[in-house]
Amino acid sequence: MDVRTKKRRETEIYENYWKFTAAYTDIMGPGFYRCLSVILFFIDENRSELEENARQRRDFSGSDLYRRLQKLIVQVSGFRGKDPTASARKAINQFVKIGFVNPMLLGYHPLARAFLHADSAAKKQILFSRIFYENSSLASDVTVDRRDLKHIAFFLRTLDHNGSLDRDDVMALMVTDITHYKNGYLTREELDQQHRFAVACGFDGRKYNQIDHLKGHLRRVVDLKYDPAEERFWFAEDPQVAERDFDRSFARDGVKHRIYKEELKEESQMLYGKPVSYLSKKPYKVLIASHIKPLAQCLREGREDQAYDVNNGLLLDPNADSYFDKMDISFADDGEILFGNGVEAEIRRELGEYRLDPAVLNESRREYLRYHRDRFREKNGVR
Image (cartoon, rainbow, N blue to C red; front, side, top):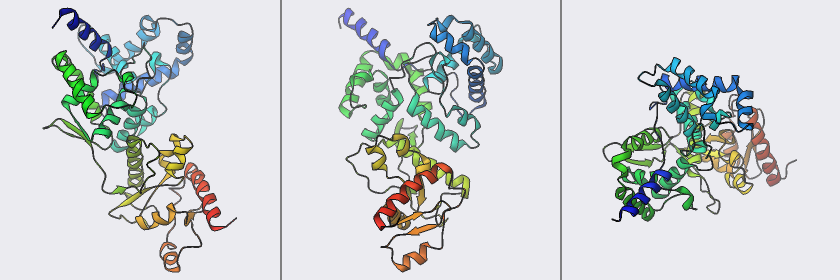
């Protein structure tokens, strides 16, 4: 190989590879919790000064603000060695890269405090998955804002497209400049091509630690399964919570939809001790993650925030869902079931025994149900 070609390739790979090392590998551990708590407190206490620093376009890396935060993290973390502040900087950059904290410390993800206050590992995993998928950017750090580059979203869409990914595929993705792929994912042919490129550049030998750190965080994503023997990732389909047929003319985000279903399961676990139908409170073998405002309608309106909002969902058994989906039944604000004209008497007697509990009917969910009742009334000629 021509020496100039080799240098050019190495320069390219080091410019564009997905840079990620973690000071904390356990996102459920006390170290992760303490460090995140200190950073969020620091941002809240110094918000005006941080914003002024950004307005003046001052160098944040050499600022007194950044040094003060490093000292606080060293105090609570127990970092040791010749330069514990280097570990503190790595920790701060980790929270920026995974999406919890904004570059230059200009705020943080709205779910970051909810993660700290979550009272179960399952809830923490759901919140981490949402933040990691929606907001992470491995090209960003505390002084560089490249949140336009969503590497983890690119990874998970590639996984969704290909079915599974192994270590070679992870390495292939980590040397990929995602701006070159307008579909937002790599095909199998593109993965193989990128893997050959990574091998030619010796990426595996140089960056094995970063590969393992990224894999460790990916293993925390909801419904993402990992086989350590084969070093393979895949999405597991939940046999308990299914979904009805979806209009494929709309591009649904498979990752957000999985998180939405997991949030419904976790909510049911919290309210009822296990996943059950919100109507009958029975633990059917299969439950439907039923949208109140139809998913296709949300996407038609460009409202992804509504499409994957847990409050726009109810866990229902397949029978109740079939009537609810077709606007043949709906619910009043107090949870009473409303029947349309086409519901047979036997079904009215069967379903009429049940109602939604007040614990399910928060204000956001009532708002979605008002939308559903309007469509229900239009169909059944009820004012």
